[in-house]
Length: 221
Image 1 (cartoon, helix red, strand yellow):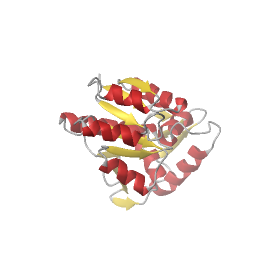
Image 2 (tube, one colour):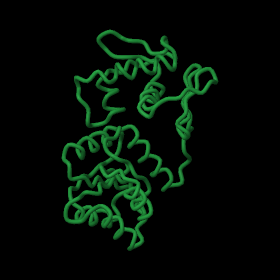
Image 3 (cartoon, helix red, strand yellow):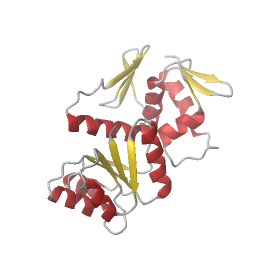
Image 4 (cartoon, one colour):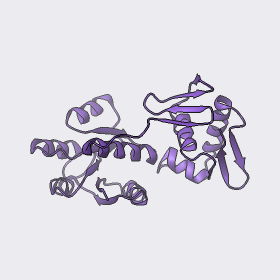
């Protein structure tokens, strides 16, 4: 069971990530300031750290720099509201293995964590393509095809299609789709899922996504 260190001072986000990782078989630990994060990370007891930049005591950049200065190779995924190009460059050049901005979808964070853990252990990666029927998604290039024809999807449309193709034939509730695609920062009363399902139907085919009354949506391919 992989030990994941979550360095995040926003309690709602920290618990959202903690609960999600625990549900997927990880052993997460949450700390809320940079000094504690650094001490935990240097203990050698963790397989990966999810690191916020705006931490109290020591900011995330300082934590990362001190880790790399002592030769630590602990995989680090930065998760922050700071999404400027200069911040991304600073994080990646400072030794981060990945950089995600908030708001975020949990499934994408989970995929990035798994990728970094595989690379750290040398484990072979699974297929980077999802297919069901004549609909295909290339997860590496973020492109979609229908009957061999490329279809242009926005980032959110692609993320929604990815969830559907990961669970073909399974009824997905609106709440599940909101959580997986739009992440922690969503309004349960929002109709955004219905809007994006309509977008996908126009691009992938109206009969591919079935409405299950009172339950949600099912991808039939």
